[in-house]
Length: 122
Image (tube, rainbow, N blue to C red; front, side):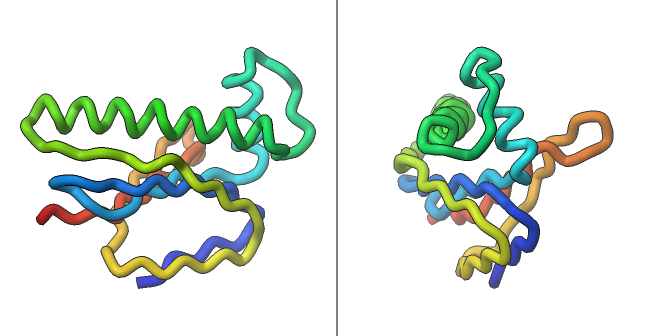
């Protein structure tokens, strides 16, 4: 199946290996990405999604996915994660063979981050 994103979108892609395998995508619009990067960098103003701010967002994905791996491990499900890949642009179309389950993280009734779980269990 294909996932299509139209407006300026920032995507972090993290591979999942082990008992669970596939990809997890964290998506956010440009403004949310800048705001979150600024918070990750102790309030430093972010004008553009440069290498430093993208690195901070990559660290966020490592924190989220590292916690998820720990939770699954405590349930006896071993999984590892790959370093994140970031994409930024508009009209991005991704082809993924595993159907995506989307979990929106909301703030004040608006989506802050979209989490797309494209994982399967062997």
